[in-house]
Amino acid sequence: MTSLCRGTSLLPFGLTRRVLPFLTRIAAHRAIRGKVHGHLTLAFGNDLSSSDKTRISKTIAHNLGLVVAEVLAASRGKLPPGYIDENDAADRAKSLFADGGFIGLTGHIGNWELLGAQLAKHFPGRADSVIAKRLGNPGLNDFVEELRTRLGMSTFYQNESPMRLVRGLRQHKIIGTVPDQDVARLAGEFVSFFGKPAYTPTGPAALALHGRVPILPAFLRRHENGLRLIVCEPIWPDFSADRDAEVLRLTQAWSAAVEAAIREQPSDWMWFHERWQTTPERLEARRKKRERAG
Image 1 (cartoon, rainbow, N blue to C red):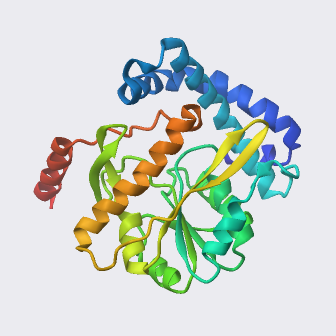
Image 2 (cartoon, rainbow, N blue to C red; image 1 turned 60 degrees about the vertical axis):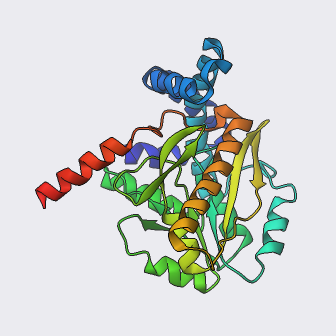
């Protein structure tokens, strides 16, 4: 797999942009279709027809190939000029944070990996790390980490001590995170997501409070024949509020920003993620299991 990715990265973007989405649509659509349809039904009820759900699931499978093609091209400096439409979003972010750090938060929307490259481009020397889960395949993990390094960002793994991130934030650094998945082993809270309780990581909120910085939701959305940068309003912590209540408020706020972006263009998000898998009952059962094992 790693050798295939390395070989593919040497191909022209014009070729990989056509071939990889074609292949992932064939290979992935059948595998993800059931989960995508189920999650769309959970989120939208009867507002989407069966044909709408099929169109969205096919688009998601197609976009998986686009994400890979774009990252491989960007890592070699081969994305065409103007492929990412920054409009005035980047300038606005730079004016807001000329002298301070922030947590750049996105979802698995459009191309989330390239958002880190945008941070590194517009905040040279201040873009610190992207928070990620270590992949099970060591060779593939090393390759992905290498790509992020080429794009200007180092990788911080979820099982590392967060104090390095806190120190960086207090030194006006920028951290990137994509926390829109259900990860039961991480600290979290149940907040509303598409009107349903979803177990949501509280790490971004805790980092914002410890680092004394805001959370800035931002997205690289699919747009015509490329990507468009969208920067939302910063979510500022209230440092005088009760900490637990503020962690919950911040977590709900950034989750709502991600939900709003998904609602605007549902086919941009990876709907096959098990976003509502953890329930309070399952979480309690896991806790008791750990206690018995310990």
